[in-house]
Amino acid sequence: MEKIDQYIRSQKTQLGSEVSKKRLIYLDVNYWIFLRKCLMKEDIDTVYYGFYNTLLDLVKKNEVLCPINHSVFTELLKQDDLESRINTAKVIDQFSNSVTLVFEFEREELEIQYFVLQKLLGDKYLIPVEQNVWVKIPYIMGLGHFFNDKIDGATQEKMQIEFFNHSWNITLEEMMRNYIRDAVAPFLDMSKRASKLNDGKFANSSDLKSIKSLFKIELEGVLSVYIELVQRYFNLLTKNRPEILDSLSGKYSINNPKELCDKIEEEILNDEIGNYLPDIYINSCIHTLMRWDKTRQFKANDIYDFEHGRAALPYYQYFFTEGPLKHMLSMKPYELSKKYDCVVENDIKSINELLRSMAS
Image 1 (cartoon, rainbow, N blue to C red):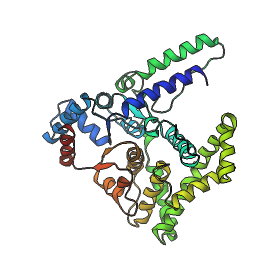
Image 2 (cartoon, one colour):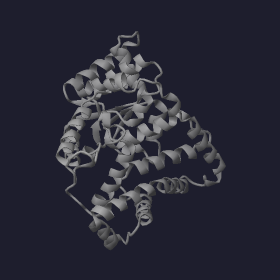
Image 3 (cartoon, helix red, strand yellow):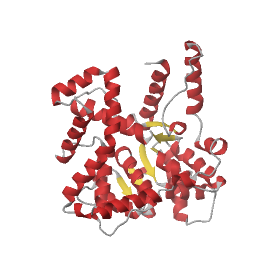
């Protein structure tokens, strides 16, 4: 492993250790907007000022943190008014300490690794996954570092570490002021994706024989996408950790990505998955519930809402969102908020009571 990779891993581990000592609250974009309005002393209901002040006090006492996720970041970029976007970024820095969940693809890769190493092969010495999923906001779209083969090794290592340290400490407000000033909303419109999901939902309405059979169909659909990620993981193991592939083959007769995906499907359908692979499981459940409700259509904002849910439930203790999403995440037969022990709330008065109980 290169020196820069070791350094990045040490910084990430240290951050994860710090974050794990606090209660984590996931706020969807509406709550960040309420906080921004309070920061700017706008004329809104005093109940939101109570929310702002109590939450800020908890953050200042290092008892609570509100890290964001890439879906909050992309929704922030949809704000047309630059000043509003900068002020929202400022309040996000204030309540998140510029911490974010790792990018979606990195999180999915980690979840696959933990499933294989911990669930299947019994590795008891891994850092808890909950401590391994946090980075600073400049790396919200992925960790990485530059490389130039014309620079000698020692100089390059020093430059890589210095550049990483500089980037690691850039705030979201700085990013909005100095690097991301242009409107990017057209690239983030999910209308076409929602329309495509609706076409598939109603074209395949014959699948709706039972919610159990529909879940199996949705799970197979999710895994058909994940197999590319599993293939990359197999390639990585072939290069760096072939002994893990040997163990999978010897213990489970898993010799290729398709057979690992089949094992994942078996564990989920037999209700043996526990809290491993939350992204695959939550994704499958949400799409099952959406298709099972014959009257409900996918809307563009649903795509972001589902991303919020997939991020919040496994890695945060609290999720403040809107009523319909709260309802979906508590619906039977999956009761996702209960499964992942995450308190999901949408009523601002109830949220304030929760915060006051934390502060007392």
